[in-house]
Length: 91
Image 1 (cartoon, rainbow, N blue to C red):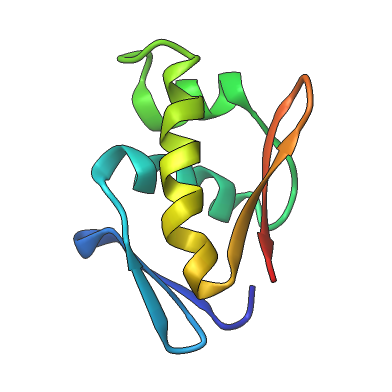
Image 2: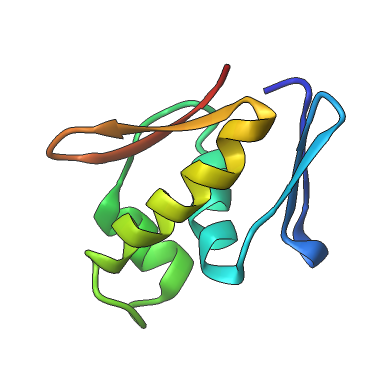
């Protein structure tokens, strides 16, 4: 994650000079995964930390889906860990 940078104020993710603009909720999900530095993060942990229980846990899947579409163009992937949660990977 050496070339990956995050601009929280603008909800921007930059990788190797490429940039992706995320919505607030997409960014919240991404940021929890970013903080984990490549380790897996459970849906429940994302739910608790990023949304303070303001959404349904399954809503996280929708935000992950949308963030994936935007992040893949800059070489960043969100991997699904079946039955657990997600993990960030730089391609």
